[in-house]
Image (cartoon, rainbow, N blue to C red; front, side, top):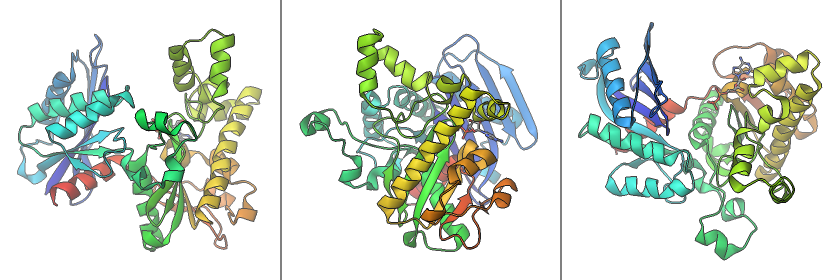
Amino acid sequence: MPSILVVNSGSSSLKYQLIDMSSEQTLASGLIERIGESDGRAAHRAGDSKSQRDVVVPDHAAACKIMREAFDSYGPSLEDHDHDLVAIGHRVVHGGARFFEPTLIDHLVKINIEDLSDLAPLHNPGAVQGISATEKAFPGLPMVAVFDTAFHQTMPAEAYTYAIDYDLAQKYRVRKYGFHGTSHRFVSRAAAEFLGRPVEELKQIVLHLGNGASVCAIDGGKSVDTSMGLTPLPGLVMGTRSGDIDASVLFHLARKAGMSIDDLDELLNTRSGLLGLSGVGDSRDVQERAEAGDERAILTAAVFSRRVKFYIGAYQALLGGADVISFTAGIGEHSVPVRAAVLDGLERLGIEFDAERNAAGGSGIRVISTDASPVTVLVVPTNEELEIARQTLGVISG
Ligand code: ADP
């Protein structure tokens, strides 16, 4: 049975999952954290067995060695022919305008990913380090890069063009790229399959509401617009990111509060969103405080859901009406009150949600709109690792 190892390598962490491609089940998963620091940690899970240990992880090469050892010690063995490891799929955050599909990694591809680091300084360098380390640890094994931006390369120019000086934007590659593409692709295809309709026939809006959050308008299976941009900062309100704001807020704060570019970057990326507004970055904590009557948490929850609603309206207009709206990721899959707040009052847009279905819970794909609703609303669990594994297998199978 072929299996694929999916690796998500950041600057200080390496996450992995071994997926059996016949059953599409996860055989093992793990997380190695605090690479380059003195207090590293490694966790590995295979079936019911779990292991966790403190271990110093000086660099990504050491992280790969720890990952291999975990498979040797706790299984399943990577040499075992029952789980024939055929390739490694790497999640890469930024593919710029160069990569519009999953790509077999060679020296040139690596140079290109590295070259895109100025667009994703927090993400792409870690991915390159992970790729180099796994190349050494698994010599000869095909490796495929799957880009978060690739799915959005189908956006038309009027969607990805910012209305600033055209030549300046060209020179510095300033445009909307969009992220979460792997999730938006997986969810839109899973929704079509669930409804028994060809994805080519459907107009869809996918709401990926996790710690990072984005919306995607998908026409006939292709992304036509999305809420993130040059970086994963704009769009929806997120755990610690502001989402859309008036750019002149930055000039104002620079002039009046004496904040530097780095201060402002840190403010909008790590001290804003749910955390900045309410003091807590986890949506469950916001909800808990809101239910206890905390005014700031009530405002935070309202700002969050209003922004999602805003994008539903915008993307319905862009699509000329949507057939399906899907909620996914941590908040989208699990938060009954957030879904209810987002969907409340949208009947005139053809969106009639069913409060009982919304509250019923469950783990698989489910409908939360009424049977009569012109727009079908779904909850669709995302699985980015499986999508990366599928795309990786697709590339190596030609
Ligand atoms: P990431 O972007 O880090 O992958 P997730 O998709 O795991 O994030 O989403 C994290 C968010 O999901 C958090 O804000 C968390 O509060 C929310 N979440 C997770 N589980 C639940 C739940 N059972 N009910 C409500 N919110 C949840």
